[in-house]
Image (tube, rainbow, N blue to C red; front, side, top):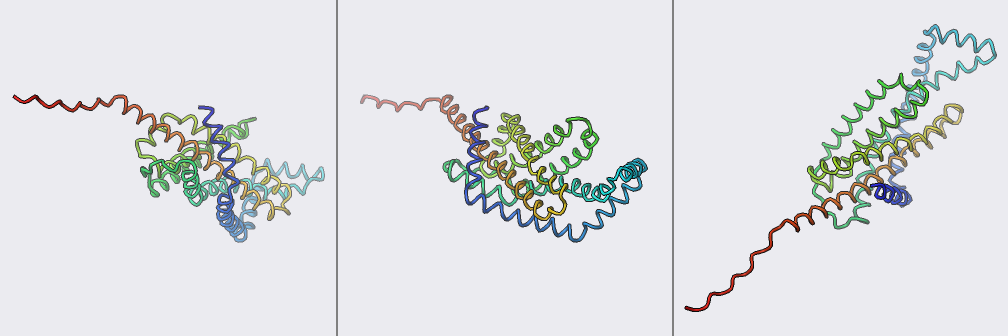
Amino acid sequence: MVKPLFDSFWRAAAYCLHPRVIVLSLLPLFLLVGLTFGLGYFFWEAAIDGVRDLLNAWDLLHALFNWLESIGAGNLKSVLGPLVVIFLATPVLVLLSLLVVATMMTPAMLNLVAQRRFPLLERRRGGTFLGSVVVSLGSTAIAVVALIASIPLWFVPLMVLVVPPLIWGWLTYRVMVYDVLSEHASKDERRELIRRHRTSFLGLGIATGYLGAAPSLVWASGLMFLALAPILVPVAIWIYTLVFAFSSLWFAHFALAALAALRAEQQLAAAVVAPPADPTPLPLPPA
């Protein structure tokens, strides 16, 4: 099973350089950048003031601020509010990027993979747009609850490198598997593929979760150098978009190849168990 994973990985990486994929990534980019700066324009100051009021109400932090001022690092207090706001906004941005890519890019990229690599694969349409919406929203709600519940674990050494990617991986697996198989696989085929390849699908999702940490480095640079945030934020959003676009292509290549293999296996099994055709009876001799 390792070979199909790596084969689909390199194919997905190559498809990311396709002009159609690059153009498709621009629409979610413009949408998310516009939404981010629009919300920032209306709510940025209010969010920072709210965070500062909340931080000032904590006696422990108040003592920390006094200590920072005593050592000449009082400026960090003014930066902490924007840092917390951007830190809290990052998971929301990741979720929006995943859902926007799944809605606006995955169908087109799935068609690209199917036309170029699996042109003869029958489309049995076992999923619907409504089903995709239900799976996406339901899985997102569960992931958000899990993220909030796991926040205390983030302060345990190294757990922040394990827990969030696992949650993102599970969410990506849930959303992507349904979307890439809804057009070509029947319901029974989708269930069978999930049963057979659940570990591989989850592994793809977790790998995507760790790839999604790369844009956070750019985002962190925006936190450290807030003056560059108007430049760094669009860059981070575009990287998020490309990461999830790559994830869609990776899932598409792996899932459609697994579906083709499943159907070939079923056809072979049907040919083996099928009884031979009755021979044509010989005509009786005349009486």
